[in-house]
Amino acid sequence: MAWLPTLIKACYFLAALLFILGLKRMSSPRTARGGIVWAGVGMLVAVLATFALPDMHNRGLILVAVLLGVSAAWWSGRRVAMTAMPQMVALYNGMGGGAAAAIGAVELIGYANRSITLLDGDRFTADGAAPGTAQLVLAVLGALIGAVSFSGSLIAFAKLQGWLDRRFVFPGQRTVNMLVLAAAVLLGVALACGQLGFALIAAFFVLALLFGLMMTLPIGGADMPVVISLYNAFTGLAVAFEGFVLQNEAMIIAGTVVGAAGTLLTQLMAKAMNRSLGNVLFGSFGAAGGAAQAIDGAQKPIEAADAAVMMAYAERVVIVPGYGMAVAQAQHKVWEFAQLLIARGVKVKFAIHPVAGRMPGHMNVLLAEAGVPYDLIADMDDINPEFPATDVALVIGANDVVNPLAKTDPASPIYGMPILDVADARQVIVVKRGKGTGFAGIENALFYADNARMLYGDGQAAAGQLVAELKTLDT
Image (cartoon, rainbow, N blue to C red; front, side, top):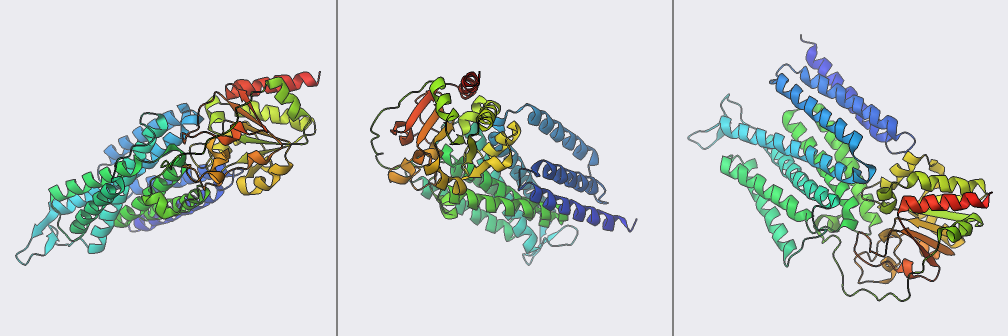
């Protein structure tokens, strides 16, 4: 069937087109669901085309692996709560990086098995073809990046899941990390030059995996959105490199698209955290500074009835959601409350910080799930100028992204991070379960401000109380 290779390449081209169009549609909440479907169809086309490759072996084992993977993904996707979605994304990033690293390992071991050393020192494969230098280099690069993404993503998953302390640091950690990376790179260079010993391959992967662990352990929770997007970019890059090794067009294009999108997202997240990309890669994420500023005043509580009245007779209300809203699954009640305010003629908007929650777009997904219209959702740059004219800002579950210390305290670990200027509103109501600190582990000066009141309680219960109190005003 001379036409089969052409058909397979045409299927790969179609899959690549669907990947790109799907990703484009994912850029807007209005079309994101359809974009996921388009990309999924593209992946299905690519997998079916791969099964048709003439030199494909072990189709039965591959089919079993695909079925197991699809079943696990379907089961976990249906059961995992929205609050656990960030760690699920981190885990999936890791699986992609691990798969790329595994491909690199198989290729390197295959070269080692097939190679024979001639008297003049040249290395050739048993079938007479020499593994090209470019092919070896790409196999090593893909393996290195994929292994780092795999082990680093597992640590990110463990941190988000609450299985590990938020940060793990020791003196000279950055130097040790760089030495581990340098050793892995040197071994990679040796492999790329044809020194394909099994001990060398094993040592290379051990060091690459170790660097991924050590790179992620010192990262603070407040920086986790940057980390997730960074490992997403790593995974895509590793897959693209291994696609070149396997000469598989679908892997090359899919990996390149994911790597490019992840890199752009990482840059956007780093900008939102006021960090350079170099600082993201090699800095001490979430590191504590010196002594923090003392916060004067006290947190002043408010009852749900008083808060409801305050917002019922306001002209403008801005609602700022955060991870606490996700934990409480309060988005539906919050939207119900917003609808009651809108029905009374109050102008309501939702303000979203780029790194609110535990992954990029976390709050947008929650609000979309609740049915909040997209035109009511404003990003940080658009909403910040409106806070001085806002009568009431309702903060529900957000902490670090509204902390004024980011602007005033150079000793704060979040100093310099752009924040939502909630403190500029005339009145601020903060829904919070208790008096604890946020994910960055620091006090929030907003909670002690003269114009701030604290509505203590679970996010969903507090939103339900606000709804009930607002309804009583209409009876």
